[in-house]
Amino acid sequence: MNAKYLISTTISLALTAACYSTASASPLPLLGSTAETFAVLAGAGITSSGATTINGNVGSGPTNTIIGFPPATISGGGLTSTVVAQQAQADALTAYNFLALQTPTLNLTGTDLGGLTLTPGVYNFSSSAFLTGTLTLDAQGASNAVFIFEIGSTLTTANNSVVSVINGNSSEGVFWQVGSSATLGDSSLFMGNILANTSITLDPFASIGCGRALAGINAVSGAATMANGNNVAINAGSSCVGGYGGGYQSTPTGGFQLIGGDIIAPPPVTVPEPPALPLLLGGALAVMAVARRRNRPEASSAPV
Image 1: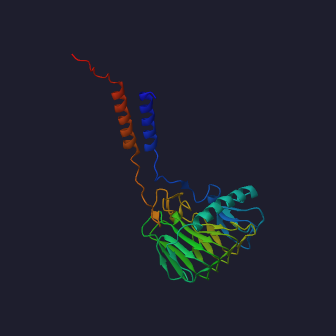
Image 2 (image 1 turned 135 degrees about the horizontal axis):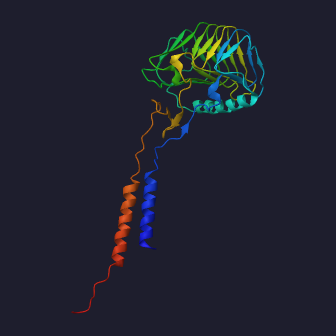
Image 3 (image 1 turned 180 degrees about the horizontal axis):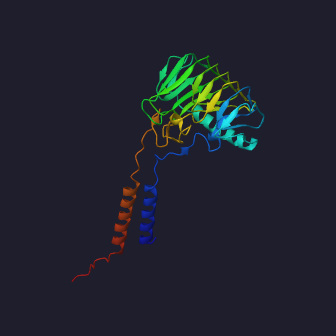
């Protein structure tokens, strides 16, 4: 083999390897561009029985039955077609499955969320989750804090219950992944994004700030039912600009982090770059040395 060709090929491989990082992460948006525009989404229809206010798109698919608009009103969006709603459902399903696979920071099965103060992390309920009173989510000054609640079956809030996000920007991610149905009690002040496998019900004057009510994620029979005085807002002021925040990227340990944001448990392991370039260049130099020795004229052994 031509020595110059071998050396050129070896150096090319070295440069290629140097540009590849074993620590690089694949970006995974939590919601696609379609789903993130929805404030209320369902599979089997949406019903509002009073003066509900929605900030964001409203849609249902495959059953596109939407009742009660008006008197319910929509700002920052509109009623969508079945095709658009079904695409949003597909995006939401990706997000739902991603949330369900995150490693729990703490198992809260059997614990009422009322009275707790939680820091960013992943909180698991093997069955139902309840909220009576006030749940405080302390972002600890992080602009991209993420709180994930993995709930095996139902989510229920009592009348007048509250979810409060403090010391951070609530727009960057409060997620409720619900295995079956979610019900928000009368006058509940809820925060975050509900992704429910089946149905979502809002009792009178219950509200969702900086979030969404996404029902029927897996079960096409899942509906969204709202009553008088409900308010669901993707953006409810400067504290929740952008709703879901940015995309996510995986980490080598199976954890995740917001792109450009704060790392969420489990922490990623930094994989050092392989010393591909020094090793391969060293190999190329060795090949060059061998080639030169082979091409060097041999000394004459004849007597002088």
